[in-house]
Length: 50
Image (cartoon, rainbow, N blue to C red; front, side):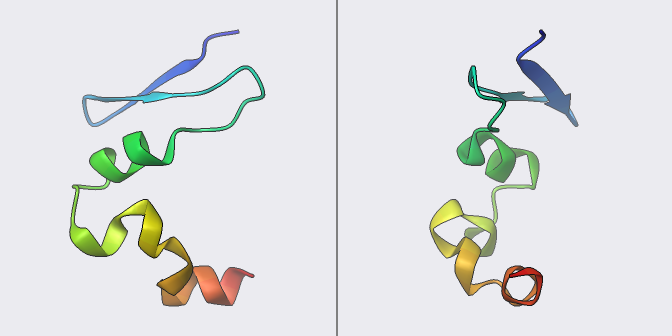
């Protein structure tokens, strides 16, 4: 299994359980403060999803 995905030139790693690295996803999203992993639960879309 390939554990590496590339989004807009940013490598997004996955572990052996198939989980994506949130820090890599943050960088791929543009690295804005509001998209930092620690603010994930504060995001309106995340709250609506949950």
